[in-house]
Image (cartoon, rainbow, N blue to C red):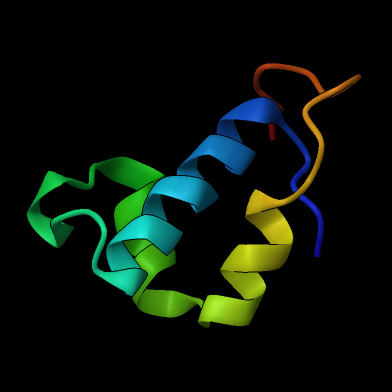
Length: 61
């Protein structure tokens, strides 16, 4: 599932780094913290690899 905003793509990248052990899980905040625990590595890869071009910074609900 591709990211819908730049913020979501960045959060997925941070969560993926923590899941792989490149970043400490204690450094995660907000959405990236919940993404790390609730999503698989494959799902995070798909979301983090989404291009930011043309995406809004944030998407309101």
